[in-house]
Image 1 (spheres, one colour):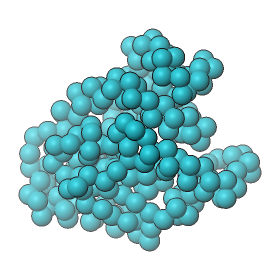
Image 2 (spheres, rainbow, N blue to C red):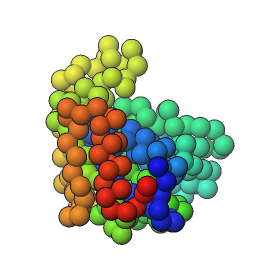
Image 3 (cartoon, rainbow, N blue to C red):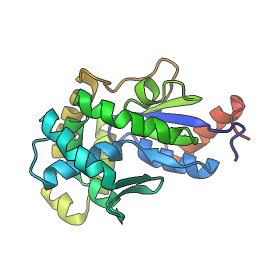
Length: 227
């Protein structure tokens, strides 16, 4: 399938574990578009703070870290690179994810990273995150909001952990962490997680990834955005 317009922008939002990253990659591959995972930017900020023992809720300190780190970072469709080395797998760690939700609640940090995301999106892309359809790409050609039950989202996150992490974390632990993260993401003052009014909601609790992808592609076809 190919896009019918140049610079096609597709926004995918949703809570942690809803499958937005997986579906963004699959949809982008189906359309031949780059996929830009904005969550990795906040994970990068959190990772740099953790590396330097900087408090992730100290806005001024986080901005200082990013001022030095961003010029050494490259954000490509395949992930985030630091000093030309792929650090994407490190950024996917559970500890980094928990810290990232705190970093993402800092208004000045979000403003700093917003311009980076919007400039990259101009080429056309599938972009996923928590405020893409509402803040980053409010004029996206199509917006999706993925969700799933809390238990199912925790199960998916548990499956992403390596064997050692699974021994250290129970499913109940992940449910508690995800509940706390949902609360932080939806209650934060600046750019909270919320569904755009014109977003198409897909509950993937009982759906396979190929079923979700098929539904997304059919939406694009009906709207004349791809063939």
